[in-house]
Length: 422
Image (cartoon, rainbow, N blue to C red; front, side, top):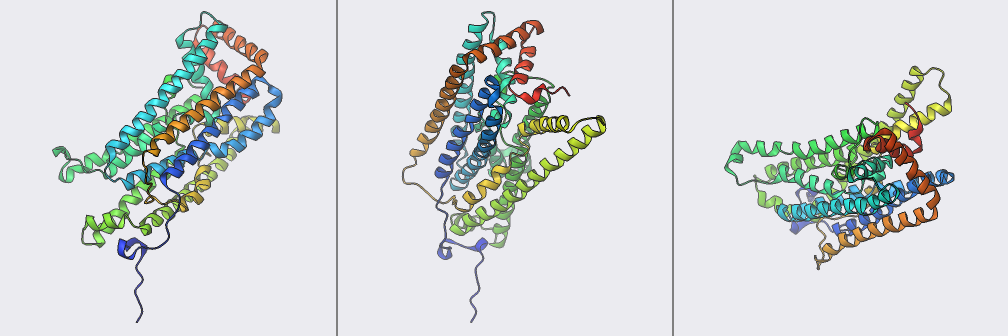
């Protein structure tokens, strides 16, 4: 007699599969923090390239290597975030507090570094410098660093992804959302998505030189590349559809789904589905980069028929640098994350959950050490060039009559491609 094989999507605890990934949410967070700290080295290298122009080629080579690490933290943090949500279903209050505190802490830390160290440096060079000048100065400096400048406060993204899950899955008690009117609550899913989209538009306009924003506002911008955002939104919807389908197959039993959700089969199915989603959107991202390069080159050739190959290459590189700043091409992290996803299980637990509180503290300290020590080493080794660059920027600020002129000058100084006049 042939035994009917039970599909993964219908497995329960008494007929669960044996395989379970050995990576947990904690492991993913540790790897993500380490990669995030390495990504900050790119900021130091960009400063080195501006103060010592003869190192530009070496810096660009190392930046290409570091960009791999810079693309990993967001997918890994988001995956760990999803794990926590799935593992502690309904415990949104704790998640809001955790990521709210982390986002707020990183925001305060970033502004402290800018105004304590940056402003005092400006003040030493120009006694008439003010807080507004410093805010615009660094508000233009960070976007000029490309995607590395945008991954300083990724906990804004963590908070937004929790909001997306909250509006998609939470069942509110308020009377206004009872019955069919719960659709009004579900539609609030649009709010965090709109914040993400607005951030992408703002970053694009900054990259194109349309305007600059002060650093305190800059630190509120989300970090997710557009295709990474699209991948996780797709996954959230797919997860919800899968839940609804399971409940319908099992006589509308939510209790059955809660049991199924704890199985290794469900965990592996999520890992496989997420890997497929990652592969699809990473491929789309790669195709998008190629299409943008081709269409940008074609546009310049039509606009400037006599353009040389060297000029065309530089102009295309500049435009792609702008797109890179908003995250186009940043979905490569999804490709790299796939092996980790397949080795990951959201059901894996740890005996001492208090260790989770130490992981972000250690991660933030590591980032601070990398940034402060790296900046100190670069500036002290290139003090003469540093002083000259700062004087040039401050002279431009005085002639332009405001922080905006200074911000634009710093944007040009911190990226050689901005010397191109479009």
